[in-house]
Length: 307
Image (cartoon, rainbow, N blue to C red; front, side, top):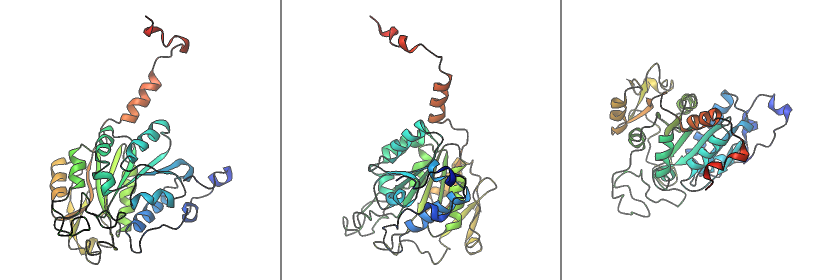
């Protein structure tokens, strides 16, 4: 995907929702991906990020169609390999605004090894994990985050194992930014993306996402008693529309121990779990090394290897 209008005149006009339109999404009616896509676009407009200076990367899955539906630069890349593609872009074009779109399988299964290194390298990007807790593109198969005993086409008698918890995985791998939101809470999700974008490193956002076609009963979006918002001056403001209808918990995002406690809870928590702005960044270290490297005569570069 490439932006359709990169003329000098276009660069001086405000970015609108119309500018970001690429094509109509091919998702099922009621899919939570629509809400996530809308929040990403809202954020791009709020911050007036130029389409020609923005890059959306994805792997394979329902969520990974997203770059096709945003009129920015983008790549619908390889299953589970969105992170190494994104890292290459971060290293070669550090001036671009980088967003990575990934599903529960793309992140926690085939792409789990790359998530490990992406988090460890802490390169600058916003990582959006769309978690519908099912393999929907392959028509209702058990995914790494499918809840135990939930029937699928691959495990009709119910999922055998307890699901992987993406939040505790990210925290355990040493992520410098871990937050969570939901596709049906648009203001909170947009504000979560804003906070993640301002983070100097790999910003991991876990997003509860509805799959109304294969698992319509998974998230009770009509009530809010089953989840809580995390609140702190250095965190993300609870959703104003729902704040009075659910629990609000004070949580300092610098407190790793309590972050693990909330992440591991059976109750859902939405907000900023953890943030460390001082973790070294692989991309910054490498760029600084190149910038500060002593200048050498290219004709003599291979002299140390002479026999």
